[in-house]
Image 1: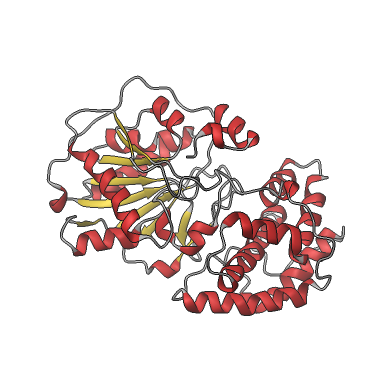
Image 2: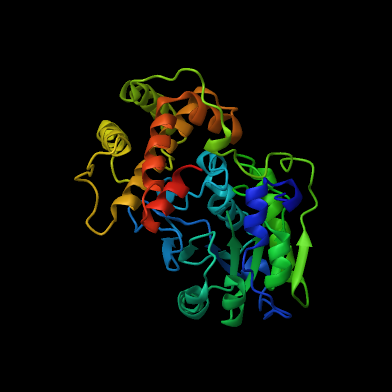
Length: 156
Length: 232
């Protein structure tokens, strides 16, 4: 799940009519180093950000920067769609933004390290032209400048 | 789409996917489809072992020699049996009675909420309106007045935040106060159970239905959008 055939009618219709891009191939770049030597950043569409940062609004195509050393307690979510169960993230932010789990992987030596920043976009977007042409490439340039090898992309 | 943009710019990506049908079309370079409901991308809250298994499965895709790669996470027993989406207010029957004094009810919930925050090392999703829980009576008066058709506004609303957006943030904070407070009262409660309690049995749920109705009655699409975000 969410298996479409098990969703309520309104959610199913919403997803079936969602204007998903159709692509035949994908850009593909092999990581140059093993995981234990790679620097990773999270790029999420969960609409999370640092408490006090500018809130997301529906359809917002900008992004927020979350410094990697931000205490987990300082991260909130302004993506509050009633299409998903927010109780999960109320209990544990790692269910969408696995910040503590990644810190554990680094501590165990399985992952080389984390980039200085994570990046967060708003979810449930039907119009993404600006993310594709402007804010997405901008976040990508920042990740490259920050020496990040890998991005983990998480939804909500 | 975002994964493709990043990959093309030189950052290798691996994605967690919730809607397989969309991922098949978009074709990110590497995606792990997980059989979990929206809001549960890493499996289950407070289950680090499951979260690590999901994370490991997503990171393993980086060893694939060619792509696009779309792999299914093998678990499909639990927690995939949870409902795919929470119930909506319109589908929840109102209890015969609810506390009429929402301020009193909210004060009680604030105490539970304090327990929740304490128990969770300070973590809470409360904080979108910018009004602290200790001054939440003001938010309630504002929502009551708005829901009743009055010319309501709050001094705490930043100038750049339009009124309907601010109302939505206040409503989101009110829900968070109650939902997290309920989790303190009943730690095992699931999202569906809490939603049924909130919309069916609380005075705050009734208040938000009135706020929603007034927003939805407007011709302004921004007001209608806020109504849609509060309850439907």
